Image 1 (cartoon, rainbow, N blue to C red):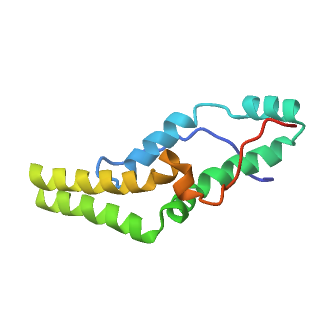
Image 2 (image 1 turned 30 degrees about the horizontal axis):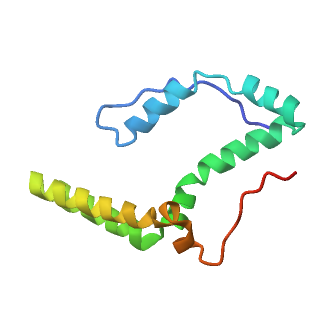
Amino acid sequence: MSGVELQPYEGEWSDDDPDAAFRVDVAAWSRQDPLPTLEAMSANLDIPVGALARYVLARWASGGAEGLLELGPSAVDRLTSAIQQAEDTGTDEARLAAWNTVRDIVGWLRVGLDDPDVAYPSGGAEVTTDP
């Protein structure tokens, strides 16, 4: 991470900036200095600060891609389509239809959480308490 300066973001943006919400979030979160937390973790876990910083950045930066891999492109497309149709139509009926579609997809995704035997019929991974 040499050459990277951790600094607050105090940029300016217009109200019609499509990334304004992200810029606001960056400005708010960048007020916090993450190094004391990483230094404490480093001391407690005996992991170098740079390795922890790299982990946090890589994990966060790949979060959207990880979500896509978990859901799959077809589920993401169905969610996007339902929401876009509701926005295009702009009626309460269209919004309710989109909500029902999203609810159904989320219900389908929860099957493995609600009934692990269905998602992992061969047993899958087990949680153990043995060291």
